[in-house]
Amino acid sequence: MIPYPARARIDLTAIGDNLARVREVVGDRAVLAVVKADAYGHGRGPVAAAALEKADYLGVAQVGEALRLRAEVGPGPRILAWIYAPGYDLGEALAADVDLSVGAFWAIEAIRRATSLTGVQARLHLKVDTGMARGGFDPADLPAAAARLRELEAEGRVAVIGLWSHLARADEPDCGQTERQIAVFEEARAAASRAGLTPQLCHLAASGGAFWHPAARYDMVRPGIAMYGLSPNPAVATAQAMGLRPAMTLSADLIVDRDVPENTGISYGHTDVTAAPARLGVVPLGYADGIPRAASNRGPLVVGGMRTRIRGRVCMDQFVTEIPRACQAGDTAYLFGGGDLPTADDWAEAAQTIGYEIVSRLGARVPRSYHG
Ligand SMILES: *Cc1c(COP(=O)(O)O)cnc(C)c1O
Image (tube, rainbow, N blue to C red; front, side, top):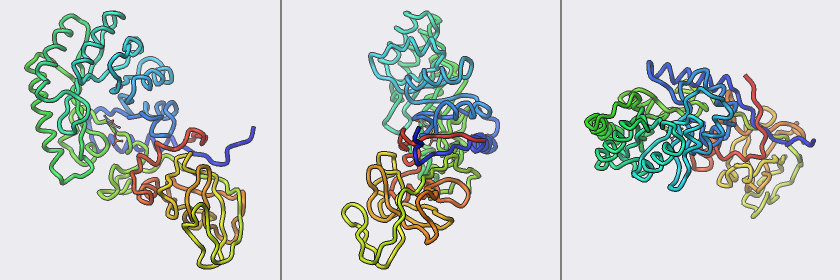
């Protein structure tokens, strides 16, 4: 087998330590570890197993992800899934003991059908949109939704164990939006209670809410990015300042070394031309691997202990970088990781995106390995 010349090494101890840090911050709250999108590119199965040592719940977006996650973690651990579309057969999710979010009238009926067909009681988290115009019932519809769910509860078909929502601007601690959403959430709690529902788990906060909005912590928090050791918003606090450390280290073997004279055009479009003689290396990772083309000429690396950067445009499978004199093909180029390496948040800044996108878009063809 020809090995892939790049790899993402995942530090499972960092996953556990980051969750422990979240626990330290939120105190006596339950923690739902978010492992959607292949655990933000880190690999769902191994991350979920590590997370379960510190978390009470696992969360994924898609019902299909939840089914695969159940196969990976086995029976027992609680799993919440929150995205499915009209027409889905939700019976498999019920049979797999997956908690479902319910945030639309069509979803209530889809769940009712699935409970009839399977005879399995559905564990539900009632979702209300408190100010994001995304998923969940409009607050105005909540009384009717809660009343319908209460009927189904009385028939023994469902158990509404959660009431939840999501914050639009938790990563901007001073903007006032989170306080407004908390106020709407409080009204939703009252409406659910008036309808006779008794959800045991109220939850509103992802990483940003968990760290920066104590009043949003309720019974459970849902950290994703913090568990992976990145900041929801490095302009508010870097991951390091939050007591987190990156779980993923991305590196590759240089496949080319070459010395070039001044005035050498580099990569497609010659968007960079050397001003002086330079020593260049080629890194076998490109935009098909999730290296943003927007990081062309900017993405930071460490090669041979020296901080350097991409030169020229990122190509589909490779890019050019400047390397130290002593470096050659076969040496390792580090793109991001912990310690003194650039972070995925640094790459996000170089590509004008967020760290979430840097790690979660890492291509499937880059092998992941695990330690810790
Ligand atoms: C992705 C997601 C999270 C985790 O968000 P982070 O900002 O990564 O902590 C939590 N809750 C929901 C509903 C999500 O979609």
